[in-house]
Amino acid sequence: MTSHLHALCFDAHDPLRLARFWADFLCWETSEDSSDGITLLPSDGTGFRLRFLPTQERKTGQNHMHFDLTSTSLDDQKQVVERALELGARHIDIGQRPEEGHVVLADPEGNEFCVIEPGNSFLAECGFIGALAGDGSQEAGYFWSRALGWPLVWDQDQETAIRSPHGGPKVTWGGPPLMPKAGKERLHFDLAPPAGSDQQAEVDRLVSLGATRIDIGQGDVDWVVMADPDGHEFCVLTPR
Image (cartoon, rainbow, N blue to C red; front, top):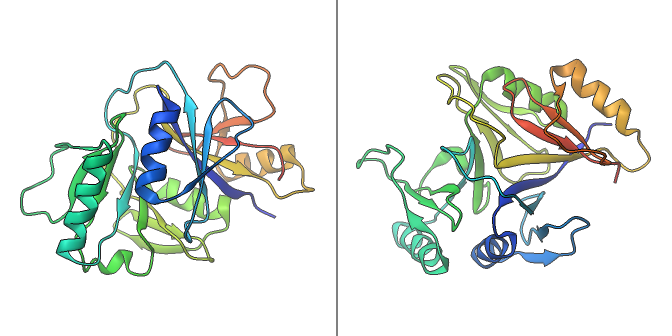
């Protein structure tokens, strides 16, 4: 059996503050975390949790992944943006054009996210978190489809998207040109093999699909740090 997407992890200077922002904004509940971080559990059909982990490293450049949040009307889009701003978000400019309908914001630690205009057919029925949009290659999209066992729901012009068979957000890769990678990513996936399976066997399977084992100074830990075909880090946890 394949691993499941256990969590999307954020590196944070102040994990508690960042977790509170996203908990209030998404209306998710906090949960105990076995590490020094903080975990949020979804209150909707998202299917994976959010984890906020302490780091001393500064954010440099744009994240390679961000949330695309949906809206049901122009008034709803405005209200979503206003709620985010009240909680500590801010408007940012990443080169979006004035005629584009989405609003680009950053959370209190500068992590980008978008509030998409109503009527977006690609994100229809995906929920408030419509997509986790990524900068990445077609090869990465194929890798993650096989790694998670999620079918491709878009594969055109080197742009790919996958979605869990159980629903929830899409995960997308925009194809070339790719942003240059500068240091460790601030967002990464935690994968968990199913209970009763073998962590090493899953690591071997992911290597056979195109991942590599890497060392980011993690030391003696019970998870394995890997990189996908684009070099983006992810962790394989113990079975659960």
